[in-house]
Length: 227
Length: 251
Image (cartoon, each protein chain N blue to C red):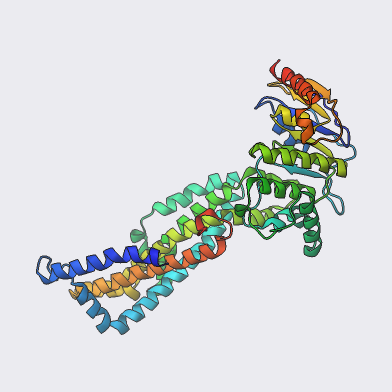
């Protein structure tokens, strides 16, 4: 596999289950080592610098710490980095605000809906103001309405923050709706079957969902997967 | 509260009344099973002796149980530190559990003498394993993505232990402690049979005096002690987990 990702891109990675999409993401985050070959970052986004950790990861499930309330969950990365309490609470509040959570910050995960848990999970990723955001099928377990909502919000966040986003999904419609560029992986071996720049407007909202151009992109991606 | 307390009281009262009736009518011999009223009378007449014995057994059980909690959790943490350590030592923890306590108790007397130390050691030996096994399994079953998350932000092993593994294992730690609480009382009584003192001695001496009513009184108190310890752990578990764990969520 040879894949170059530019800074500021919104890349969707598609492929059948078991093709190594998630492994690729974990390797980019340095949570797993490649058997051969290497992953280079220029500039290096893995080094924590003074006030932010530059890579963040959103998992398939929200994976919140059930014994911490919303605010303390969102503040966890800063706490692990040794940020002082007052400062990390302030930054966690700001991150929660960005995903639309302003109230009930003292609730516990067990008291939240699936969509709200995922928002907290996204806030936790954003709290360090990362330059690279990795998402591993983050909305797969949510109902469609909530997913549509979070899709739009993620796209807005990306436009506002100008970070690089790599979004792993098995949903063709989600990939086409969100990304500027989509990569389709082969069933095994990590070969790239399609690498395509999507021709869609910059602003993505629910009106686009019925747009024939989106349908066209979806057909192309689906064709590459089934090939 | 009313709904949880009332149902178990009904069979208790029913069985007590039935036992009283059966013994009084001579269906069951009083020197085998005393009438509940006789047990009650024994409890009243020997109250000073029983109260002192209960205090002593409580102290031994509690000390042994506390030791089990501390040492058990510490051993589980050590075992969880690496797969190699676990493979090398966990089989011995299991082996340790299968050694019959009653056979080890005389050894404990040789090591610790005729006193509360032996009782504490016996309570400890009886109750430490469930704490180790449950804590270890709790730590090892921490969600892999959560481990990844801590790794991603460069958390040290110590920070990961205290902020992730131990809190995540807490519900299972309490499961272990609940089992251990009852076992600690059993261990203390076994220790007292050999080393003397406490309710164990009361049972042993009353038995040789054919005071079956007193034996029952002491057994009843020992059971209540176990129940009390169990209740204490349940309360603690409720207080610590109620906000986040499904097992402690009340309506």
